[in-house]
Length: 319
Figure 1 (tube, one colour):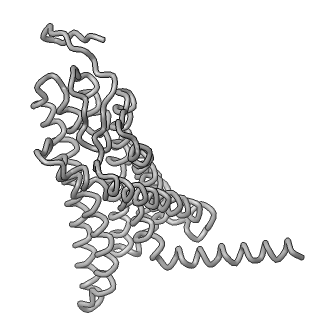
Figure 2 (cartoon, rainbow, N blue to C red; figure 1 turned 90 degrees about the horizontal axis):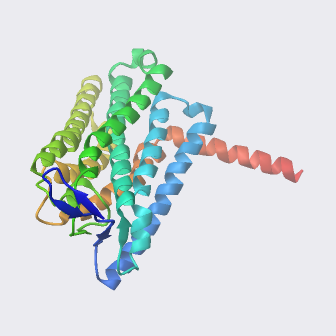
Figure 3 (cartoon, helix red, strand yellow; figure 1 turned 180 degrees about the vertical axis):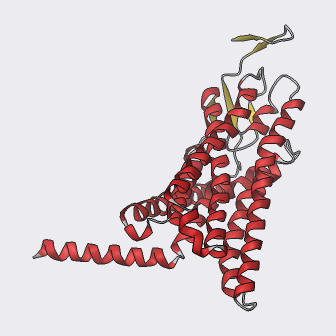
């Protein structure tokens, strides 16, 4: 197909892209296959388990677990945009992805990723309110407020994706079609365009770069405020709070550092970012259920209650 650009030049349309992937080594591909397969299985089981427990257990019908259930939903969605295709592509010599599917992958990555960033701020605000304003917590974090948070999260995620997606969708791709990554995303795909994308780089920095940096700094500031509040009310004993928050901060760093690396300084000359994004798609979605929920005492009690209910039902059926 031919495309007539605004300057009158003719370009042949690229109908598909080639994803170079992570490694050409057979041994490394085998390792990556098992790594991504085990990780994705853990992502599915862990996050669906959290969604199931929050829905069926009335003791978990609280603002914190409502937001955690939505985090599990976003983790599952974000990893599903890339990991299944990575697994299927590891043992094929030519990893092709059609232009429409590439654009869809970019769109959903940014919807899920942008929404999850905003959700993490809502979760940090929830913890800040619970610790710093405990008497007003249920009033502030009302069901209406929680639903408003989630609706806002989805709206911001969609706006974040659409505001960049339109620029890339209209770019002419006239020849080079090898994407130096295991998934499609703005910086890597835009490098293949047949026109100067200098101005669009600033759109990416202003959008993805800003939301990554602003969210990361907001989360770190909220954790500092929580630590200061705990320190003032516990005579300087920060050990328990620091242990809990250190796990949260670790996940935040693993999630945001690749985003900041790619979007604040777009179009890097090295391919390090594609390896860093393994943390975003395959590691943090596994760690989030463990750190935010499974280590929580309320969730352990909910699991015990579920176990007792299963035992009671089983004993009734046997009798």
